[in-house]
Image 1 (tube, rainbow, N blue to C red):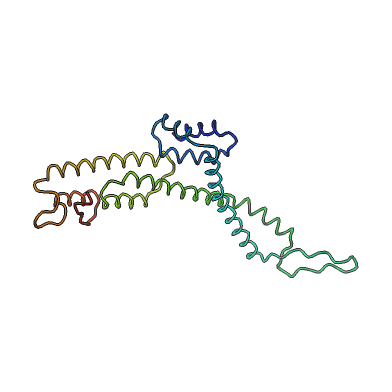
Image 2: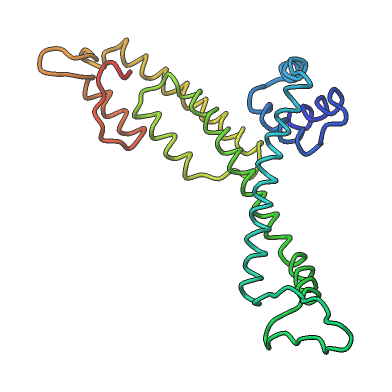
Length: 235
């Protein structure tokens, strides 16, 4: 789905950075399930919205790259005790020698060129990690919407498990999201069945109880592994 959305974006917003459109396609892929919904979502976007999205995303990525480069350059200066090359003295006076162990501007330039190539991979890893962090926040927001109507104890358990997970790409997360939707539907249906049947006695508090029945409590415990007691309002 992401590839189809990106193709639609590139056709409509020609001239916009493809890496930015790729990132936007990933975000839209989380919100649609069919090609018709994808086409509708792209048609609803304006050039101003797309340009602002891509600009904001690139600002975050560029800021991280600039920070990484500055940290690396500062480390080189500290490690090698860099010194600026002094101007040549008049011909009649011999040029002053640099203190032993310091480097002139040409030596600095050679070291920087050599090390930039060596650290390019590290910078790209940081960029990838940043993009993963941004995607992770979006995915969590989508998951929270799916869990909006379930009991708090179940919702908290699912989100806690999600925070321990990693997803290599959008398709991997979408597979997890679809499985979670099915689990939520089954969980909600079983709670509804329990409320209708009363599982042998009233679900909500009567004399001698302040919350749901022990049967529902045991069901929640089995599903979530939590000892938290639910009240009737949480179901």
